[in-house]
Length: 254
Image 1 (cartoon, rainbow, N blue to C red):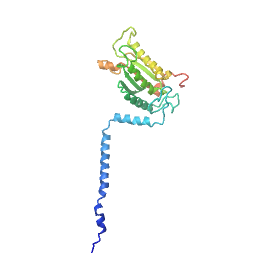
Image 2: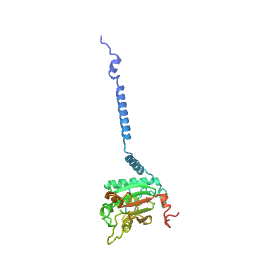
Image 3: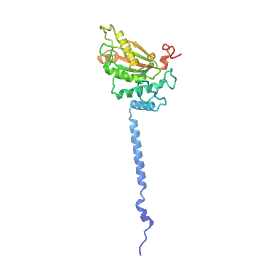
């Protein structure tokens, strides 16, 4: 007589299937803790940059290419659109401008620019080295490429832009410039002219100032510190600072 197999004989090899699901769960749990550990070690500065980049990418304020600029700016904001053509952008949106310029400069391998925020607004600092020949106010070819990127990043801003020239404390006396006052002012003016003519920044929103050696970033105690002080600052003024500026008649009523 042939013995009939019990039903358990057919399923006996599968009674441990739950181990597969358990193994999957343990794997996912391990991945979760590895991710949490990685996040705990993240560079806060880089994380803030990434967060800002996402804010730019997903901002509801869309870019409208400037005439003659081709594709115009990177994904971000035509920041004047949400507040009205003649209004400054909210101070919080200056981070978007900073992030946009940061990625533009990184794309061209530019490393002579520093960006910071102070009570005036967004400060874009361009070092003299590689930007101007010593004792002269003529933009080098590489500086022209650099200021083109800066101009493309600020061309749609409704904010006032102040260009400031700075030198170190070493006196200068040449056939063209008799003092650091003249040199710093000439450099600021050269940048203004370039931004208006080549980057099409509205000249009504630009101003130039020369401070010679009297507004240093650091002390002039070493050649390295003097090099840091020789610079041009492009300052995007915030709403508070603009309140103290002379009104632009017919453009920005107060």
